[in-house]
Image (cartoon, rainbow, N blue to C red; front, side, top):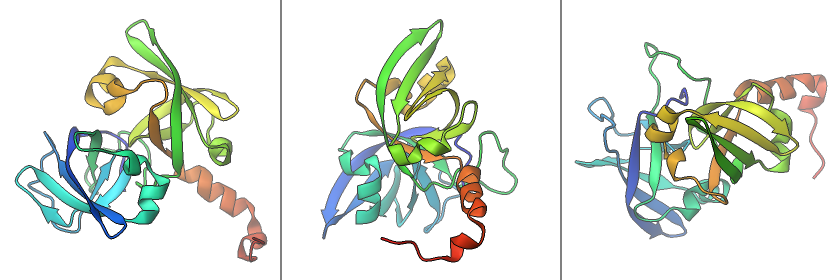
Length: 205
């Protein structure tokens, strides 16, 4: 589990195709790895990846076809910058919101402009995720816990303060940038709970 508070910005130092999926080598920059062991989880732009090998500069992770299809990782290249967060410990501060590291879909930046010292971003989410995005609710964008300011159909707006622009990859965003989205976990469980006994029924395909 994660909180959506980004600890460091890393970059992809190597990307190797392996039998249809991908092995990534990630330089972790200022992210301390002294307490990381093999098998630990690290969120990379919001996608929970397992460290299968530790290097002097970072770690190596395997990425399945499922993850490549459902996240922006399939578009990463050598040099791509990524937000990094280690899985939280029981003693950590809960500064963001409950983030699972399971990406729900890919969004797109549709506009951005300066607003005093902050930036206003407007993003478009996949239609199937729109019902989970609420005014003043939480959403995770590339692993960053953010508050939704405006909702308009499938589109929503975010106000990004200077610190977040500097300490996450949001400073790289342009119109058309694709981003990983994870909706509020509580909203997903609430939807399932409201199904009641129907939740046990097989869904028609």
